[in-house]
Length: 270
DNA sequence: ATGGCCGCCCTAGGCGGA
Image (cartoon, rainbow, N blue to C red):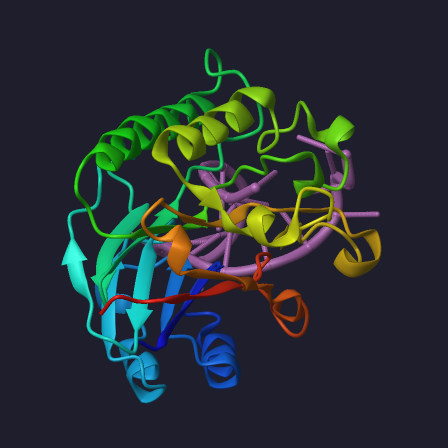
């Protein structure tokens, strides 16, 4: 039984950053790469570059200009129905089965600026998306399903040390109590393990995203952990917790995404 | 709060990101 090495990365335009993606694949050789914010339609996706890099299996949920997710793999992918989380017709999820593991690649709405669903429809959409994840994963848990890994840009930093300042971010969308409670409810009801915290404990500052607006992202270091990898009860025993890696180096260099890749390794049944 | 940027689109300011 060989490892399955899975990476999630909000790439912020796959076409603009295809060379960076290929360098990353060359350097780290994951088996499965889950991308968010590809920002293109399926027909515009740079398939050939991935094939050349050894990733022949691709499942895409594309959309013109915004959003969009894709999962690419060295191993065959079985496309599954993506659960109905979004309800706005946006390309925010793709579900696959690879070597006996279900992998859900998700892009939760950012939610706009104002953390009040009454006056901000984007925040209402985000909360609705989170509620749907809760009910759908609660139902799934009760069934006889395959091991499940949920990855993606969930746009919520749930723990105190998932943000640079818990106090200063309590009213900032991504760390408000209503979102944080929602995310924790999914984890609890769905039987998920938040692999980052299982691997590193509660006290270490962990960030996967740094704003473009900082003059020097590394020096100011005002990051947030928005990108997540969860395992359900069937998958958790298969995960090698010590393999959890945030590839911070990919936030640097020429024209980076504002997110970095996040990786885990697990045993795969298939 | 970082509001100091970035990428997209019927190319230029508006939208969305978070």
